[in-house]
Amino acid sequence: MFKFDELCELIRIVGSTEVAMVEIEHAGGRLRIDGKAPAPVVSHPAPVALAPAAVTIEAAPVAGGPQAAAPTTAEATGADDDLHYVVSPIVGTFYRAPNPDADPYAKVGDDVDSGKTLCIIEAMKLMNEIESDQSGTIVKVFPENAQPVEFGERLFAIRQP
Image 1 (cartoon, helix red, strand yellow):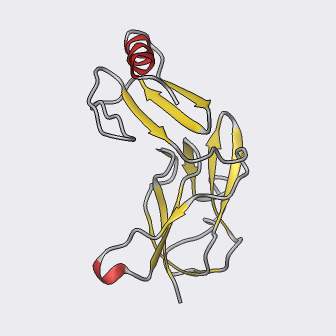
Image 2 (cartoon, rainbow, N blue to C red):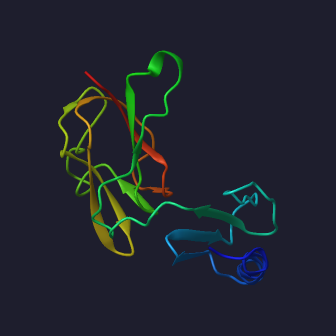
């Protein structure tokens, strides 16, 4: 992992330049510094506020490339205990359909099986199909079409049967 003084130096450098974002993978962790974030945040192991850039450190191993399955979470509360969330595995632009004239891959009310393509996320001119890792019914689509999405951001809520 990175030492605190190394993190501070990286944050200072990114914050003082026109760089939008820097992402570094090192020793099984991922460090992302967003130079244009409105509010600085550092997470793991303890929150520490630093200016002017936002930082997130994740100790989880890095996924195997842009075609990897989307990480998911079942963080639901209250009456939504049967909801499953498909989250973005990468930073990019969310598209509901393969082209502007086509029908969306999935919409609210659709029954989906595990492995069905739900959307595309464009990252660095590569189109990455995001598949459902859970069978169920789509109850919510979070991002708008052509909206930028972040790593870990919720894309779809699926009600499990």
